[in-house]
Length: 473
Image 1 (tube, rainbow, N blue to C red):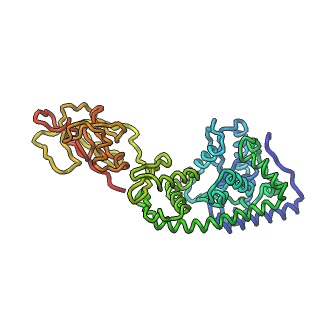
Image 2 (spheres, rainbow, N blue to C red):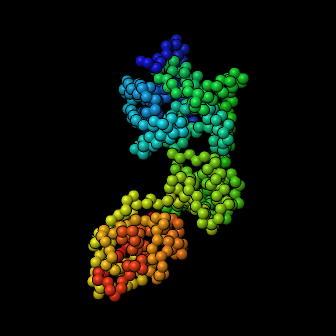
Image 3 (cartoon, rainbow, N blue to C red):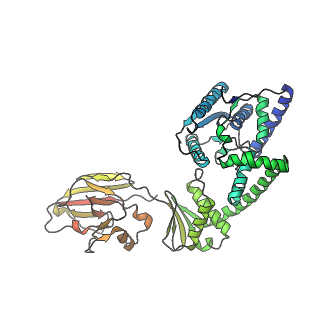
């Protein structure tokens, strides 16, 4: 099989002794760091490479002792052509021979070969597993080598304290049980157990920064400092993790004291927030964002710097777009994180004598006789002249550039200005239904009728409009 290595076995007795030693270390690391519990469902992220194949076999050796359910997931990114297909078929054969249930996800990421794009796509697939199996854990084959590579890359680029702590042993459902092992130790384990694996040629491609660090920088460090670099790296990362955990404990106390949650909104009272040390302020902002994207979004240090600068220096009423649907609003005495409401994906149609429901709203139109008109103070009920209506009417939310003739104003006005005059908040204006006759606004629902559709003495047809408001979550 091209590209597949099956190493020759070493002496049986020596191999048996070393196997037991590594498996005992593996169990100790997993238990000490609370990575596994009895009867866990564990998906091994299985690329077919040496690290992931070793991890699968390590779990299989402790499976019965801890009553673990071991499965595997393989991601075919679709960027390495025949080699990717070879890897997939290899993984399928190995899982079949080992009686390990396997999920294969095939992606098409042609043109997106950078490390971050591949990682994001991979974890998006992992998230589907997490959603389907809420109690499952996903084990990845990250090693001490990977951790040192990550540390050096972040150090060179400039990183926060959290970044310098390296790869976490656990992050939500993701566990890294091999972080205590070097790649050389794993290689010996593979030889002892005669574990087959495939080699990914892209791991030799020096166009990737990680490969440059792996093949150029770290061997030079080993030459200068010897094998002690690995124990030194382990101690340094451990000290950084301990310090960060202490800092995180204090940060979370302040977060719980200052941040209030109301539905999908997080609010920070600025009076006490502004007195905190900048490191705490940045950490609290990071926690707020993580509350919306707990696993699949990594905010950069530069983004955090920009957000902190916005929070401290901009004027009241300003907005900062963090990611697609997440907005930070600067208000007089608070900062508010809100999800931008989804606009209607399509413009809705409202026919004569019809009721439609959408986004928690109900909107109805009914033709009535003039003597049935009963004007009240209820802003959610309107009576309009229907002589100019062409059905079906249209329903959507506010759009930039909308104009209408507010009843009582006597002239056209931008809907945006109308909202400002009515003290409608930026978020709220995107949630107010707009009823249109063709391109003309008939009713800003629940707020104001357009002058052109008011009831006059000459009206021949009359319609009653009624809006039932959504309930606040």
